[in-house]
Length: 171
Image (cartoon, rainbow, N blue to C red; front, side, top):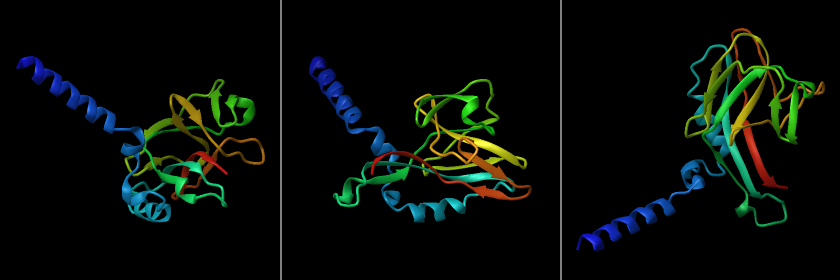
């Protein structure tokens, strides 16, 4: 009897683990492909008076305009956000077009988004580079005209709203 009970408990535990996936945990149903409402919702959470605030989303699937758009998904995710002094392509090693390793700069601050992708960072006025921590690597998908990586300008006494996207979609 003990053996049967143990086997049943083990089987149930395996079923529960198999039913949980990273996507299911990271895809709150009300926000799936409803990003403008998510941005509006998260904006009401801002409490910092100077710095950066925004929403992090992940976009994946086939987003080609002539293909079934149901496979194209965008939703909030929970990840680390890392703020560096303003970095250019000369300050980093590029692993592939969106992953970087800073050569000598140290991060100024690290925070984490909540389950709805919201983050905020209190910072003094200045120019910074913002990265997403993805599987232990620094992800950024934006450059300015001077080779600055994901630059963010913070003006004194204001909050710059910066929505970030991990983009794994096919276009």
